[in-house]
Amino acid sequence: MTINKLKIFNDPIYGFITIPNALIFELVEHRYFQRLRRISQMGMSYLVYPGAHHTRFHHALGCMYLMQKTVNVLRFKGVAISKDEENALYIAILLHDIGHGPFSHAMEHSIVNGVSHEAISRRFMEKLNIEFNGSLTLAIQIFKCEYPRKFMCQLISSQLDMDRADYLKRDSFYTGVAEGNINSERIITMLNVVDDELVIEEKGIYSVEKFLVARRLMYWQVYLHKTSLVAEQLLMRMLQRAKELTTKGQELNASRALSYFLQNEITLEDFDDDILEKFSKLDDYDIISAMKEWQTCDDFVLKNLSDMIINRDLLKIKLKNKKIKSDSKERHIQKLIDKYEISKKEAEYFVFMGEISNQAYQHDAQQINILHKSGKIEDIVKASDQLNLKALSNPVTKYYICYPKV
Figure 1 (tube, helix red, strand yellow):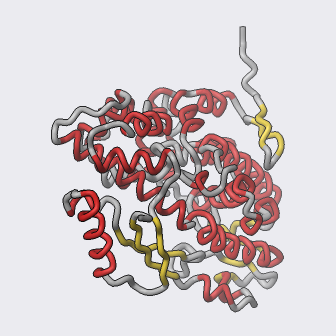
Figure 2 (cartoon, rainbow, N blue to C red; figure 1 turned 90 degrees about the horizontal axis):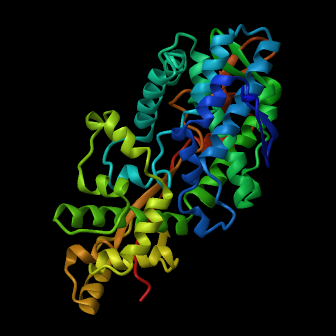
Figure 3 (cartoon, helix red, strand yellow; figure 1 turned 180 degrees about the horizontal axis):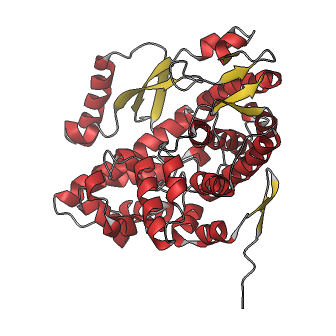
């Protein structure tokens, strides 16, 4: 019996998304990809925006849908894209986030130190390439920006890629933050290729301006929202504390996959097939069930950090435009030491400072180029008559301090 592999998904944003061929269907069906159903797209943002429970699975399919639209638009404009290249673009964008750990970014800064999700995505793709008899080779080349046709790499990773075109629209939809709602299909309709580089036709300039402004607003209002920020920090510190206790020999209740990463120091060089397999078993549910267990553990730090996240009783956070004096931090630390009779090291898990930066457009990175009717190509900041685009390319830094409410 043959299974019909040309499935459709009903997406709340784009409507019906079609799976273009049997290989893509088998990749979507693969347990590595299905795991993305258990990885939240926006980490702890649901503690601020109750609707933000969508997953990396939604996002990856949305990116593929936009890539299908893009291929059709570019071909219509006379850009030659072979069947193999088309397929490779779909695979590369579908799998671009497959290496994300639980709650998206928390793992990268706590228990798997210095290993980016992009590096893990590459490992997953290489493993799948063996399993699928080399049929992902071209997709991996494009993903790694090693393919000579530069615009294909730009569609996967640039300042105007399919990833951003989907997540801004999707995250805006699920959070209910209307400011992030961009017209991604209009932007795609305005895409073209000159000398193998991606350009936006002049008519699309206002859509791109809207896209950059939406990106800035989404960062301040959603991704860098102070409550999300403190929740993510607590999550990372909770995992760091669990790792610290585990390496000292304390046994903590956790799933087999999570226990492995708590007990071992993993670097990129260590990420062989065996560790990749263990990583593929790790998702949000491991962290949530561990937190629920750790609420009753003996360690003051781990118990309280777990409690704070589970019950959304978070630290107080103050955001300032100027650097915060360190004596303010010391004061809060001393207060905590006196109240709970804990060490300075333990108190520092609950009192800390940091900074966040928002730059909607990186002028010195791969630029967004506008194609004028005359054939002239120039950077969006120069082409735009909107003065604030210059401002958007300046990074804005804010400073924060977190400490207990009492």
